[in-house]
Amino acid sequence: MDTQNTSVPPHAQSRNDGKNHPSHRARAKGHPGGVTHDNARHTTRFTVIGNHLAQHPDLSLLAIGLACHIQSLPTGAPADIKTLATRFPEGTTRIAAALRELEAHGYLRRIRERTPAGRIVTRTVSCNQPGRRDAPSETSEAPKPPTRRTPAAPQQEPTRRRALPAVPKPAYTSPDLLRAATDVLAGLRREDPRLLLSATDAAHLAPGVVAWLERDLTPAAVRRALAGDLPLEPLVRPAAFLAHRLTAKLPPLPPFRAPEQPQPVRHPLRNCDTCDHAYRGPDPHHCQGCAGAELPTERTLPPCLYQ
Image (cartoon, rainbow, N blue to C red; front, side):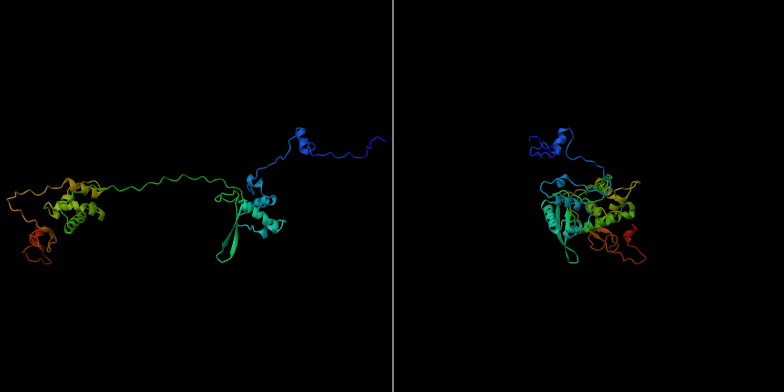
């Protein structure tokens, strides 16, 4: 009676201690347990998924799989609840709950926008790295190799124009004197085309010409002094050349007269109504050469121009 029935299968032992678990038996025999990978390198049609998503501790398996599917879609593909429910068998309720999980953890953003036609549409933004909104979205295409950027040519700073040398300062200036000085400078180009000046250069040089005119020089004499005996080489900066001449060749002041001697009357500089030359004299309309002479006809010239 104490003989056991060999045809009865033995009772299954409890596996609460974990000794009979397949992985435990495999480790006990010296074989590695767990997952092993037989990987092949993808060259086309693949999507990079971060482990922070694939192994997320709080997302459900449906949410993780749905995020992987949405990240593999090309830009512009529909990813609304109805489209996903048509693609997968989970139904709209479970898919909507999974989308809310992804939205709560930053893997998904849904933005409502108004189209030009006036309709309100929902735009789905997939984030492969939550918190980094400026990262480019992954597509199902193979990543392109980074393009080599050619180093940009160094930008040359615009050359600044050097300031013109200083010119002599007159003791007295008036609009008439400055106008006469500007006329002298404007007429220099007729003496030599290289002495063409801009309006800014003439405004800088005009006080220096006034300093010459107040030394009892006529405008014609100043013009000859500035435009005479020019160098043969090109004048790179004619205004600077003239500023140097105005300073270097400045004539002395008129000689000082003793106090007992009567001081000569200093008449203002005027333009002659007949010959249009500048002069100093008591006559307010005519220079000494044209005063008392007959008015010139079409075939005659003012007497002062024959000198």
